[in-house]
Image 1 (cartoon, rainbow, N blue to C red):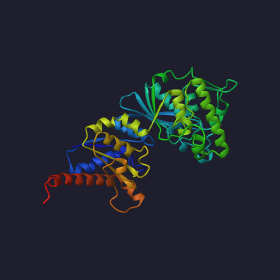
Image 2: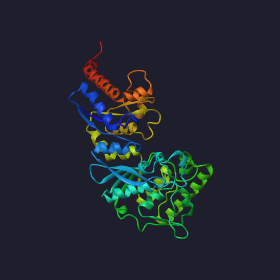
Image 3: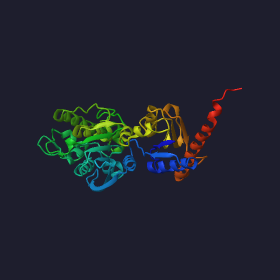
Image 4: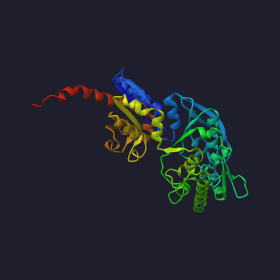
Length: 385
C-alpha cells in the first residue's frame, strides 16, 4: 500500500512536517512496511514557507531588512531544493506583530522590507518567487516594496514619496526605469486567499485598515490614496488593478505585486500543491491522509484539507482527514472520512500539549479500521442466506 500524508500545520502544536511524522508513526504500528510519502502542506498563510522548505528539502536565508516603521529587523525566507525558487512571507518583514500596538498607523507603515526580501532573493539568483501576503501592518499598495526594487513614485515636484499609505494621494508619476534588472526575468506567484478589490467599501482600507490602527477618517484618506495609486498605475504601467479580485490583500500589496512584478494571484493551497507536485504524488497513491487543527464550515474556502481532498478526488483516491476538532461535514469537503484526534473529552491546552501522540494514535485507529475492512471484504461479497 502506498499512502500520501499531506497535512497542514496544527497551529500552535505541530508543524506540517511534524504532523506528517506523527501520522506515519501511527500507521506503521499496524503496517510496518507501508510506503508513506510525507508532503507537508499549507494554504498560503502562516507556516507556508516552513512547509515548502520542509517538503522540498530546501534551506533558509536570513537577511537584515526594514520593518514597517523603517527600523532594522532580521527576517528570513526559504529557498526550495531547486535552488531557484524563493518563498517569502511578507509578514516576516512587514507584518502587524512587528509594530507595537501604540504605534500601529497604516498612514505611515511601509512594505519596503518585503521588497528588500525580494531583492535579496533576486540577487541570489532566484527567478521564481512564491509570496504569501497575509498579516500585514501596511496599506501602501505595495509602494514601499516597489521602491525597494528601484521603482520611483514621484509627486508633482518630482520628489520621491515618503513611506506609508497616506502619501499615495500625492502620487503623480511612476518611473520604473531603475527597477531591479532581474524583475523582468522572474515569475511571481502570490498566495492570496481573499477576493477584496483594492478600493471602495470592500477594499483594503475599509475592511482591513481599522485592525491596523486606522480611524474612520484615516480609512477615507487611505482609500483615496489607493484609488490614486490605481489610476497612476493604469496610466503609467498599463495594468488595471483597481477592481481585480485579491488586489486589496495585505493593504493593496496584491495590487502592487501585479503592477510592478506581473504577479499571478492564486489560492495559496493551489500554489503550494504545485510547488510540491501534490497531484503527481497522489496519482500513484492508494490512500491520502490530510489534516489540520480544526475542520469546520470555513475549511471548504481555500483551506489545505479541502485542497488535498479535491486533488484526491481528481485521481479517484480515498481521502481521510485528522484534526484537533471537527465541526464540519466530511462529505461536503470531498472527504471519505474525518476524525478528531483527541481520544476523549479534554480542554484545548491539553489537546495541544498532546498533539503529537494524539495524532499518531488517530492514524493508528484509521489503519486498524482499514485493516479490519480488508479482512471483512470477502464476507461482504458472499450471497446472503
